Image (tube, rainbow, N blue to C red; front, side, top):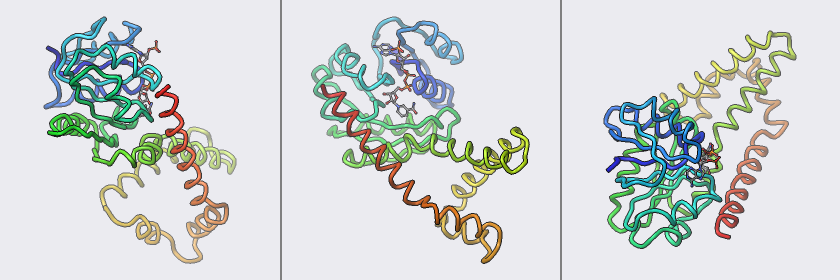
Length: 262
Ligand SMILES: NC(=O)c1ccc[n+]([C@@H]2O[C@H](COP(=O)([O-])OP(=O)(O)OC[C@H]3O[C@@H](n4cnc5c(N)ncnc54)[C@H](OP(=O)(O)O)[C@@H]3O)[C@@H](O)[C@H]2O)c1
C-alpha cells in the first residue's frame, strides 16, 4: 500500500508531492497518477520513493490535486472507506462527502504555491468525528509550510487571502520592477531589487512577529522618502483595492463551488 497517492500531477500536485515526499519524516512511498504519464514520471523520478501509477491503487491517504470540475469524477472512483484530502478550490466538504463512496473520510485543504519551496500556507478543515485524518493532513502540510485549522465557513476568504495571495505579491514585484525601469534602471537590476526586497520584507515580518504597522512606522521618518511613497499608496487607495480584490476572489470561490456542485 502506498503511503500517499497524489491524483493530478499539475502545478499543485507536483509541488506537494515533491515537498512532502522529499521531506525527512514525510511519506516514504508516494504514487503519482495523472492523465499524462510523462507528467507523473517527471515528479516520481525526483522522489526516492516515487512511483507512477495508471489507476487508483490502495493508499493510506489520497491527495486529490485535480481541478474543481474533475474532483467529483475522481472521488467517485475511490475505494470505500478511503482517506482523502481535496485541495480543489471552492468545493465544500458536504459536496466532497456526497460524491465519495460510503465510509470515506475527507479533509478539505487550501495550500498555496509556496509549498514548492517549503514556505507554503495551508488551511485545513474537516467534520470527521475522530479527527485522525485532520491530524495526518496537518502533519503532511507542515512538511511544506505553515498549517492553520480554519472553520469551513471562512474557507472562501482564506482561499482568497493565502491561496491566491502569492499571485498578489508577484504582481507587486512586477509593478515595482516596471516602476524601476520607468525611472531609469535596467530590467534585470529592477527585478533583482524588487524580488529581493519582497523576500527580505516577508522574512522580517515573519521573524519579528510584530504588528506590520510598527515595522512600517519604524522605517518611515515623517517627511522622508518612504513617507512620500506611502502617502501616494494611501491616496490611490491601496487598502481599498486590496479589500475589493480579496472580496472579488472570495466571490469567485463561491461561484466555483456552485459550478462544482452541478
Ligand atoms: N494553482 C494554485 O495556486 C492552487 C492553490 C490552491 C489550490 N489549488 C487547487 O489545486 C487543484 C489543482 O490545480 P493545478 O493548478 O495544480 O491544476 P493543473 O495544473 O491543471 O493540474 C491538474 C492535473 O490533474 C490531471 N487530472 C485531471 N483529472 C484527472 C484524473 N481523473 N486522473 C488523473 N489526473 C487527472 C490534469 O490532467 P489534464 O490537464 O489532462 O486534465 C492535470 O495534469 C485545483 O483544484 C485548484 O483549485 C491550486
